[in-house]
Image (cartoon, rainbow, N blue to C red; front, side):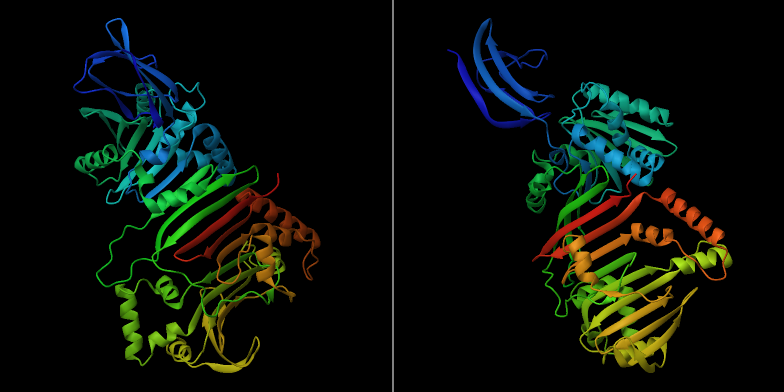
Length: 553
């Protein structure tokens, strides 16, 4: 009697499937994928290409069993062990790898992008093999680079449909780079030794892996890493709940990023704030947009003083940074974790000198901002009539919010000496210090509500603007209350550099020539118009958003 069954759900390519019963009758199995029949009571078979298969078991010439099965391309994250601490990958070769490589060739230059691909080997091999007919690599599977906790090195992986040809192509590529294959193999692992290091290649469940250890790593550690990959579960990284929840939101990203912090902390110490990041980059013709999720070990509530830090600031900055963190988290960022030896030593020295370090830290709101303005006229004056070097000219201004300045004043006096009382900003009785840097002098001002540091000179007054509102409208709420945001606006710098100018005392023709050369050099240096990154806290974590925008060709 013919028995017909249908395996429910979808099976990943490269994953072994059982047919028949261990204590049942012996059948000759035709798997429907062109491979040879297998005669056994219970057959195990892996399908290397996606599709719908009809598997048939024969008893002699009589059809005894028929099994319908649907096979899909195995997602790359299922080929990564659950405990991986970092992963960068393109989900597919067909839709994602090409656009990603094209975009970052424009950002970094063809030579630099190719150099990065070659360092990991498999991404470069994937580019070459994906141009073929799909008989070696699966265009619906991806290529990636991962790191495992405790293993000093990285592991690249690539979805393949013909393991033998893929391994041979990799071996040829390594040989061209001076690698020699070690004749000693262990359980299907091929070992390579070269002047630039060693490598180990193997195939598991439809993926080709290349282990690239650090120079000091011995063979035992490499084999251990291979074992960890081979013993990982069918869901791989998707079995880790924090990753799985964020992974679903990646959508149609061309390039994906994942990292987690596995560090062990001493008993009683606070764990690191950042637990994991999952993000995807969607690549377009002139821009790439990043969207992701950040998980933290504790809530990041908006700080008590969180407000519009740049609500009244000079217009036209070429760079802006805003951090919004609870004061203790900000201290961890600036000084290191509380259990850090150097931080403890510094705080003890200050406490011996009579400084209340706890009160000093808690006096800050946690809101810190940095703005930079470009002085195009000063730049050209120096280039044409000064040193002749393209040195930076401009203003950098840092502001940190305070709830009170009383605990901070003794700390700065201890570090910088006695202050001078004079008007500064909106305060008629600010405490001022002068701090000599390598090539400039910084003014440090302490007012009842802020600590400010300003360095550099501008080319005349700039109108004040509500930068918090302007930047928020321009960049999806970035720089708003409670947000931590970063902007580098090279497009603004270039526009200021290109603005026609008449500078007293300088030959106009030389000014114009210098502007042209400087602008052309900036265009040659980078095609980026601006970069923005924003984090909005939400409970134990938050939303991550960013964008790289290129100049119009």
